[in-house]
Length: 473
Image 1 (cartoon, rainbow, N blue to C red):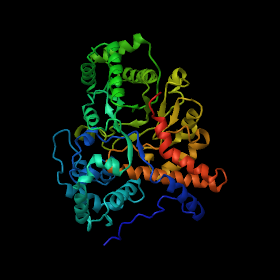
Image 2: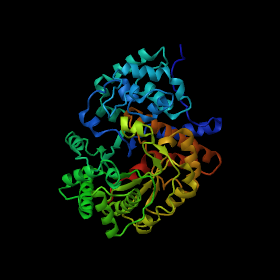
Image 3: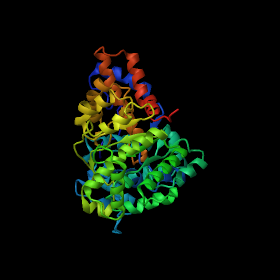
Image 4: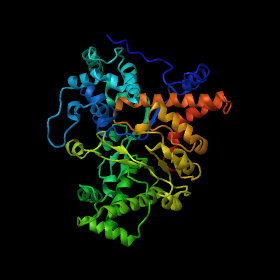
């Protein structure tokens, strides 16, 4: 039988004894702070419905592409992990069978942040002490299933259990925000808030672009067959998001190009898209133009602009056709920010009404581009390591590469970017431990006093993210 599953109190803290002692003290001051979760993908309906989670696999495996992609990489089909098929093909419906596949392949997660998160969840959230394996799969499943059936394990109750003070969902610009309206009626409208994501509308060569543009027009009661009407409708929906408590926008472009077009050229390209004639270069130039336009809208309405370029989405066409987007086949590419962002920052980078948070999955640009940009432009903050860099060593490298140029206070604090609700506390806990270790080294090197390190750790965990996304006065 596998050894019992326990969590060492010093996990992810420095191995060197003197550093570990200081890190313990620092981490002890952040461990129980509330969570500010300003970028994530848990659906608003999960909270509005407040229904019991269906089974352990549906909670911990199927929605989490960090987990499923590792299993897929070893030859397990996505549908065998419960990942829905958009083409109507068969999908494994037995949560117990899906759970067994994870437990039988537990060794695959050695050394990954997914293992850290899952172990934290199993012990701290579900109160189990069996290590996943083929032998323990059924008993673990039964224990977790019993826990999620309890009344205090509904999504709204977990907001309190997890000490989540504020959580942002990510919602398409065409969302009518009905779930957020329900949350407002339930008294949670200021605790679970929407984030405006217009990606499907600004990439004119998307397969459903015209359908989405028409839906935008219907929601805003504006004719979006015209470019001017399209912009008017976007402004109207942004106002609706602000009224629903929204604090930010979210933009996932391939590049950080923000070169604006003159109105005549933007109108020409838009008209070609409406008639189904837009070319790939035209669509790319329009997407860049719209980042510049969105920056102006953020200056005007106060929504914080989040940008994370450098990912080639849906890398495998057949998987995308069968299962849709966001199934683990989004692969990073090299990113460039300095030239791409220059047009946007020339116009808005020193404007006190504008705020931009930059994320990347290309860590080669941390010290070369992103830290210098955040370290001089008042409008810019450097977002936390995320996606493939949301890991112990990835977060350490981020601090080492970015801090000397950007400092701590030109960053956003931690952003968890999760689709798996129960992993949120584990992700924040890991970030706080890694920051404690980095700050402990600065103390040991006499570059910070211990009281400064504690204050900085608290700021990074709690005060800085609240400030970075706070509504504009």
